[in-house]
Length: 133
Image (cartoon, rainbow, N blue to C red; front, side):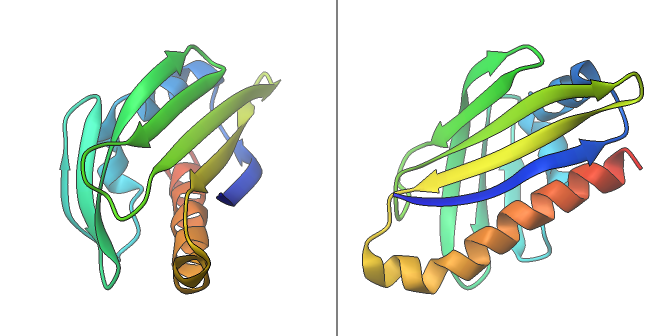
């Protein structure tokens, strides 16, 4: 299992606001990096293509208010994966969010996909910070 993460991302709004935003996939389109194409989403699921890599689909598997949103792979994907958003109040003005993306990759795919997948997680983090700058 390969893990890609971005820890303790400072966000300039409260956990409730970020939780509600991330709890609806229709909001994720604004966070996606330029390499994401064919974005389609409803509240609980989405599908897209990472240019030059693969088509992916995922769904929200659990929402735990101001604590965690657990996302899992849906349908046919090149590999099984999960993604978690963890929330923690920082102070009166903001919170911290951590993103953890776990994916089951064979060694060959891990070598090819590690850099783009870490970039994907980093861009999600940057997009979230920009949204609430």
